[in-house]
Length: 322
Image 1 (cartoon, rainbow, N blue to C red):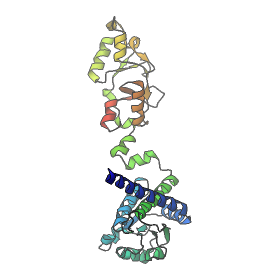
Image 2 (cartoon, rainbow, N blue to C red):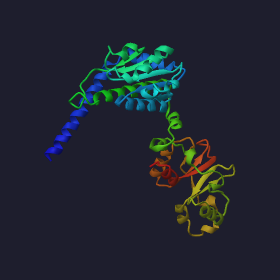
Image 3 (tube, rainbow, N blue to C red):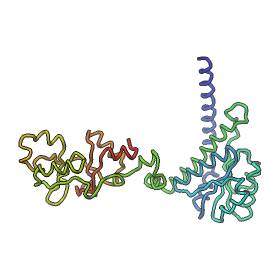
Image 4 (cartoon, rainbow, N blue to C red):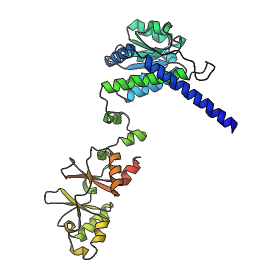
């Protein structure tokens, strides 16, 4: 138990150290961040991000975040750049080089290339007098703080600050471009995030699959439609083909006496819950859970009661929306 407590104390110390570093970083931000955002916004090409070692891992994540939030970005490994990948960097691009010390020798050829071809160079480093900072057009300077490891040799505090600075850049660019959840969905259709941003129109059943009947339809025929379509319900249409009601299991039970002598319009529940195709599927799940139902008719546009499709809770579950 004492050993476990010691491990927890160490973990808390590391996290607090890094949290304090992030606060110091935030307080120290200056116009160089605005200048970097402006430079990226005015770029006609892509953002090329490079770094070696732990800085390289952080650079990859920053490139991925920028790319998924509307700023075209690529990671270029500095060693590979020296062996042909410099051809990936062209006029119109902006290079973001990351090195805590600012003296990573692997970056030398990339820095020389930016100088030779007049490609703007952004730097993230903690040393204003370093080679990287001196050659950069704009330097995002991080505070020189102790690493959380306690020995000063394991990149911990410095990499956390670098990652946060990259996120700050990405979100500032994203907000300036009014990058929306819909835009993010276009770039990120997979995974849990993509599932959460799926629209009802992406998942709904349409055409002949939708169980529909006119108000005058005998319940004997309506029951066949319920059975054949497999949703356990049938939507009931008025004379203008607008959704006027829905027949569910509950309606059937309430009208068991003489059911086959009735029409769909006589049995249906009026004004059922509906949703539009542009709504998030997650919203549809919430509606179904709140109403304790398993299906929603989709009307297009919402409010017109013109049926566009039907969505079942199982469609959402299969898509990873829970």
